[in-house]
Length: 209
Picture (cartoon, rainbow, N blue to C red):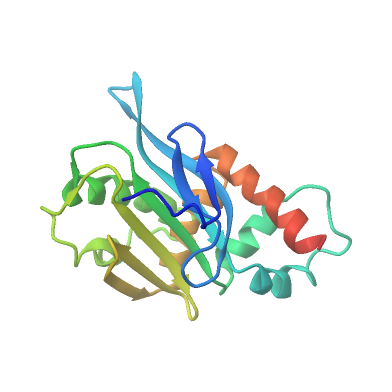
């Protein structure tokens, strides 16, 4: 992916230097950036992708302000749960930073994470749902560094996945939406610092606005 135009406001993920637009294509605002690392043989933590979490602040305000009055000084577990469970616009934009990946490898990493997250909401692994998220994408698709994957929660609990600008799936499932965003905002997030940054943005930009 080419460097963003200088006229576009961006935020850099510090460890990877990946630039994320301050606003998504449909107007959601960037509220946290982070990096997904994976240990190899339990020894080396490889950076797989950088990510940005985008949210519809207006929708969050409408849902959360009536729930949290007075406004606390820091985000709580209940706040994160309300966002994970709620029917409002969210997006995670992933940019691959580890070279040599293909869709088969990404599917395995993605499905392992999502399968573990689903267990927070259901005793069933729901393997059929997992397969539908990236199932349309051909496994031999090359994903060199700079490739972008966007996963969005659309109204009505629809989880939409785009790979390099092409929509590869749209799955209507509250469970799938919960499990996916729980990976980033739940009790065991993929990047704890990114979750904390999201919470700070939530308090300052939504609840105290």
